[in-house]
Length: 320
Image (cartoon, rainbow, N blue to C red):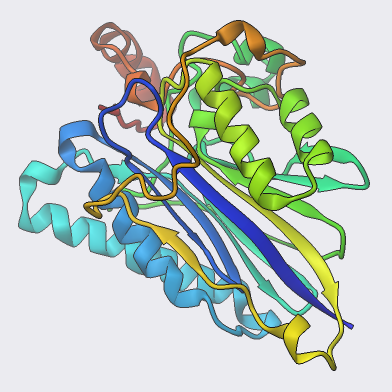
């Protein structure tokens, strides 16, 4: 018996934004979400460049080469962003998060940078398998605040690391691919407004990937949809190695934020916001329900925190 990915992808600009700066790719071997930031500084271009580069990895990669392949590709994508800014200084300030999963045989390799997230549902239990690169997560790690306090912190969306052409230290990890596991990759347009408890309920209750992805988008919209929302729901399925139909890979699905038809993966017309419908426990990691990436930093926040972050040796990016 072999393993195969079965997935559904949905993305939506939300109820506040006029454009969608998220980019996403899902294929037989690769899942990736990128949340562009920078507003007028071309966050849509940044996420598109990175997802386009990552999509080259949607092929058979030997287990022992997976981390190296991810690292090489991420570095190359980051270099492309740097070259773009060098050629056009008006793009300075653009950047993007990246959360990606690569599968080969019974091994999964992941790369993560920023505050998009990956979750794993195994035997009914949901856990977050990425750690946010955010200011409040640093405070949690230092013991200065609790995860619950971080979920309501006014600076919870201050990102400490993204791809923007500067030196980076992404997180890489390797884990076993287990039949029956369900992965959720999402931008913070979902995780900031829908609690982890609620996401867990949806992932358990909606076994069809398409219906599950649509339900998650719908909940984010009902919570006000303050940011672009992107989700990948992917199941690891056991298939018969001798059955050609079972082994036939699912078609790849992609959305690049800089494409003219930027909403083609949206599940349905957007609904009116009803924030009171979203309930449940706050996520255990920093982030929680809160503001959008487009409003992560106000001018006041920039002034107040520059000295603090400079002293801590942490750089940041203000999103537009």
